[in-house]
Image (cartoon, rainbow, N blue to C red; front, side, top):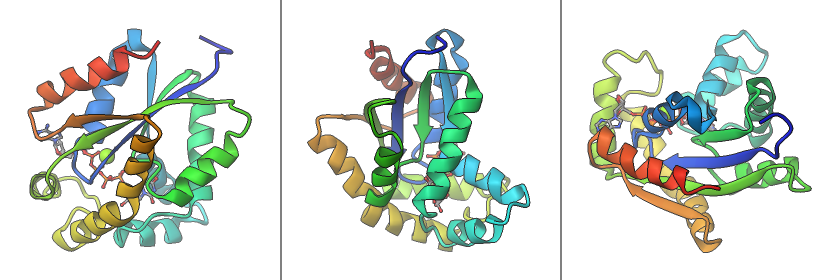
Length: 196
Ligand code: UP5
Ligand code: MG
């Protein structure tokens, strides 16, 4: 409802783990009231808009590297305001400690509640197969074997520590995403429904 404290669920997992697919299914259920904000989609839209940041963003995406946090946090905050919603699935962010620090600095004072991070856990071989398949038609500059390898390294080295951090805080919910889309969705929905 309008004026309510915004609530956020961070949806994390490797490239091709199914973040976008699962977030879209939750957002489709209008009664749940969630806006789906994909950090990657927001960055790709900013790149395509002819913004002065376009070249820089494209370079990071091509290399599977993490765009400087202020850029991503700024895009997320703008999208949150524009949505008119008060519940958010933030897909693919925070990806490293610097992302998390920038988020926390920008929400100082507790203006946003992060309920938990939802971790879609999937073997790397399966994620790679899924992305190679999607790459036949996605047009994404990073859906090729070389970029996938780089994305997986960034995931292991930079994003896994963030997942561990939420676990240490008692704020991690884990789902095995090496199941059918429908099976994963049942478990995702169960976690989302448990939020007050
Ligand atoms: N699929 C999905 N679920 C399936 C299932 N259960 N069984 C079988 N197939 C399944 O799914 C991928 C593919 O698999 C699809 O074809 C789907 O049908 C199928 P999807 O839901 O798209 O997975 P997702 O996890 O969203 O994969 P994505 O490729 O989007 O993950 P990435 O994390 O790599 O991409 P993202 O867009 O988040 O980031 C891209 C780049 O942007 C990053 O590498 C980075 O350079 C940059 N970025 C930042 O710098 N900062 C950020 O905060 C975010 C991104
Ligand atoms: Mg995605």
